[in-house]
Length: 434
Image: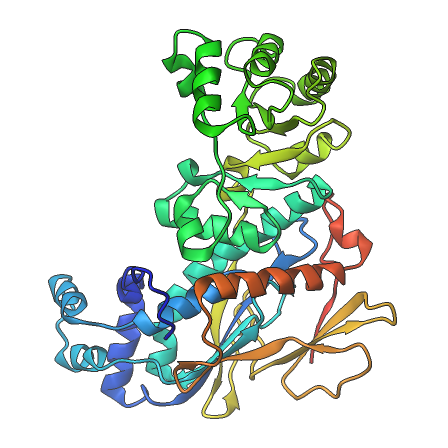
């Protein structure tokens, strides 16, 4: 475990569904708890119309793994909830994950059937990780997949994650991390800055303007505290007058203005004209107000310098669930599979490669129960993450995020152009399972 110098995250052992413990208790009773098993995490399909998904959360899962233990407080909580099986409680008291974990590198792309995480362990150990793994990967991958579309729509203009007030406090930190991983420049969330080194930014809200007797007084106070390079919110009363007052207070060196309401394309165009007339030609225009990838794309022709994104990134409307599942695919070396209609699985531990053409553009993903004979342009997707319960390459949280950000950038650069379309379509790569 890496000593990051940070306060450890909350003990994750009870971030678990009770039915996991029910299965462990029954398996301990009938002697099947130690059977060698392989579990896989995959998505049966992408959210409707999405052309690719982005895997995020692997680093957070590895952060949590060493802390996934049942101490006195956790065991007492289980007893209070009616779990009084002594054999189960004794086993949990000594639990430490001792298995192996493989998976796609965080930041990579995934498609239906991609085995993004593989856990090999005795049944009881492996099944105990199901809820935590799915909670982390489903949430973070949904955010990352949505954020990647916004990065595409922004066409190199910076995006700021600012959704903390629209979600759970821990989800806000995870969302900031996932968004930064796919290319967001910064976040408003200070804890994301502390834990993961995500650059943070923020100026003021309408409340600060309303606190003062007039807009000029508010702007003067902010410039006095933060300097002329600050960004002033100019739409509390009248946008044009707000811009004039902002430039009068800060001068042409004003760093930026923010627009948070109204017809943003029209307002941004007029704001740019007015700023130029006032000599503030280098003052940036930042727009916010419930932006999603479509609204961002609609501002492509407007003179906008950056986007602040909140609600549409961190809520289900903008980041629909990716529906990853955690399924047993092998038991004592024998493939096993679920055959339920609409929820079938493919038995056996998988290998996966992504195929590329001579120009380095991805063309297909091959998932197979047998090792793949590599061809020119193939990239192995499954990498070792944990061996014998120990993380293969311990990294600080900030280092892990930086590596995932770089990996995503490289993987996304290999997508065919049609993958970046915002219109609904089929997954851009066909996953062949053999």
